[in-house]
Length: 109
Image 1 (cartoon, rainbow, N blue to C red):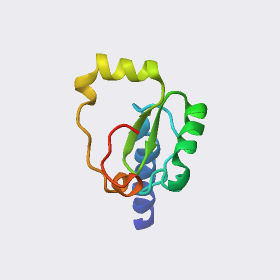
Image 2 (cartoon, rainbow, N blue to C red):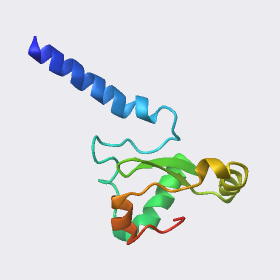
Image 3 (cartoon, rainbow, N blue to C red):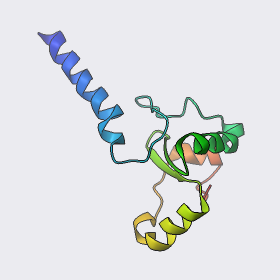
Image 4 (cartoon, rainbow, N blue to C red):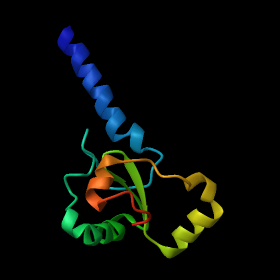
């Protein structure tokens, strides 16, 4: 009985991580629980990796580091997002991992 409860809780957790959290976000690589997409990122070649992900998923995609980060990679999309929806994207959340990767909380990548 205890095993069934644990298995059910694990199934709910996996459903939440892999489906529910990603449902309203742009496409992107499948994140792993707890670490997101950190396993596929190479700090030394992150620019090349982001260009490859842009080719695979389009100009707007989600990268989990381990919280979701929406990456915008096209001029038209940048203009649309920042001019028409500027209030919705104002402010940046603090992320220790981003500080480590980019050596500080720098603006647009």
